[in-house]
Length: 189
Image (cartoon, rainbow, N blue to C red; front, side, top):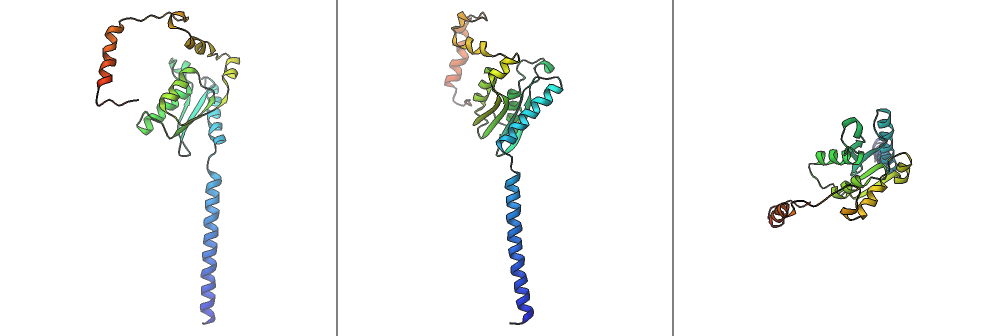
């Protein structure tokens, strides 16, 4: 074998080894740059802090699918005069719109505070796989966001709740339920 051929083969081998090394470095760097649960929670917390600065409530939420944030939400109750405009509900609405489906299985929610009863219900209805929260409902209660009365009310019979309520025209309203029950092409949720 000529000396020049040996040099070329050695150089090619070295280039292959360098290429494998660099490829491994890129992969390790890619893995290193992948967002963590803490990163997602920090984003929800940052949203809550920014929202306070912008005149909103101290709540933020993000929805994650396949390691990527697909939706963000903040509390805009007073800004939009909408009592349902909580961070979690806003994020759920955005995620459902982006994905084009109401079932958000395969997604997780990160919220800056343990959800209120309405938001917890929405999270269950959206079929999110997991929920992470930072502040607790006790932390929220300590700054004036006390949902404990709602939890207490849910335990009571409707007649014993603080909000007066009564059944009215059930015999007429049941027709929609009967129709739904026998509907062959319904989309269940």
